[in-house]
Image 1 (spheres, one colour):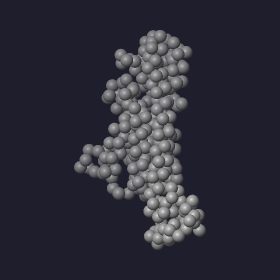
Image 2 (tube, rainbow, N blue to C red):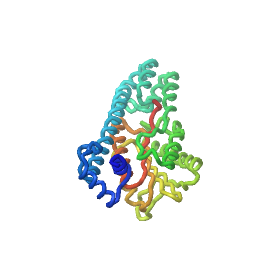
Image 3 (tube, rainbow, N blue to C red):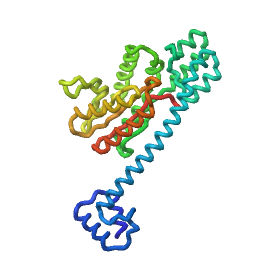
Image 4 (cartoon, rainbow, N blue to C red):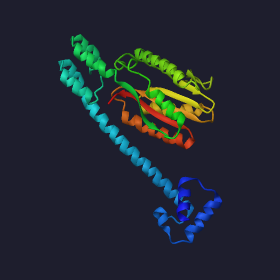
Length: 301
């Protein structure tokens, strides 16, 4: 009996009548081993389970961010060394640094794009190597709010299957107008892709939920069950948070699938901090009954 009550309390919300029964059992039995931390009321049990649940999430998030941070530090060190390797024409060193996660799209400290530097030196072998790593750019899921949502599964698969290597082959170091044009082309092509692979959803670019406001959603979807919001940004934590809050504030109250899709930014933009804010958005979405996914466009590793 106690095992059944414990299972019910953990797995499902319980009504007042059931809670009263649970508290009576707790008051009139010595078998407290079924309840962690010595809970003596249903309220205490719920509070303990809630605290332990968040502690588990916090530990998992911390471990995940530590792994991301280690990978990011290793890639950053390799990126620091890559310009000199290209300048020296050291093919072996360039290959080794790229394998460690150095950014093939980056520019040297003087602003020269590495691809242009290699071309100017006539190092076609290094040019081809850099292009090869650029072509390995892909969309990869970092965080999602639930693994038990068929539509979110379909949406994530659709995004991860989209080839983005031609759109972000060399955008870092370009002028802001050039980068804006590259992202706009990516946005348009991704919209077409989603229309083909998820036809039951109506897709639209630059959707304005409220005509009185300038805020527009990069890629907006609507079907019989929910709304879909996909926002494209450089991997900046402040932009992720700003877009998430402002978009949800102006959308109607209904089920919303929200996606943060971030492409490479400057070296000063922390990927770890961006993923940390993916986690915050995921938590808030779960609390609101919505679904969330945070994805990065990154080199295949």
